[in-house]
Amino acid sequence: MEISSPLPGTEPSRDCPRCPRLVTLREACRAEQPGWWNAPVPAFGDPDAWLAIAGLAPGKHGANRTGRPFTGDHAGDLLFATLSAFGLSRGEYGARADDGVTLGGAIIVNSVKCLPPHNKPLPSEIAACRSFLEGQLAALSNVQVVIALGRIAHDAALRAAGVRLAAYRFAHGAVHRLPDGRHLVDSYHCSRYNLNTGRLTPEMFSGVFRVALAIRAQTSGPNSSTSPR
Ligand code: SF4
Image: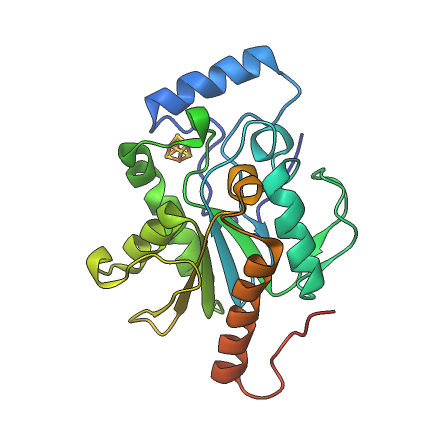
C-alpha cells in the first residue's frame, strides 16, 4: 500500500525503532494482518493549511489499518463529517485511504505516529515521537490555528511550541495564544468513548471549529473565512 505524505521529509521511516513497545505491537500486527498499514501513520491534508488538527495516535482498526489519520474508525466519522460541514474537505468520505477525499485549508497530524496498546501511549513514547510532530508543525508555515484533540495532543503541541505547560491549562473550548502568534484551541477527543458517554457531542465539536474559523477571520482579514455549508 502506497500512501504519500503531504509533508515529505518530516515523517519517520516505516520501521522507526524509537519505541520498543510500539515496535513489538507493530510486528505483531504485521504478522496478524499483513494487508493492513501497520506502520507510522503520515500526516494527511493540505501542506499550505491554516488549520492543523493534532490527534493522539492511530487506532488499531482505523489509521493503523488504513494508513490515513482517523480513517476507518468511529472517531473519523465525526471528524471527517465536521471537516466537510465547514468546507475544509472535498469528496465523499468512504472510511478508506483511497476514497478520494482531500482537505483544503486543513491538515491532520498525530502526536504519536504508531499504534499504542489500548490507545494509551507512554510518556516516553510521546516524547520519542515529539520531534516528528515538531518538524511537521514547523514545516506548516501557514498554520494559524491548531486544534488539539485531547490533553495529550494539547501537551504535545505546547511542548512542540517550546512553552511551559503550566501556563496553558487544557479545557474543552479553551483558546491559548502561543508566543509564535498561533492559537491553540482545545477539544475533547472525538473518540467513540467520549461520544458514547456524551462528554463530547457533535455540536460541541462543531463549536470548536467555529472558534477556529473565527480566529482565522480575525487574524487574516474579512475575506479569509471558510463558512459552514
Ligand atoms: S511512535 Fe513515533 S517515535 Fe515511536 S516508533 Fe512510532 S514513529 Fe517512531
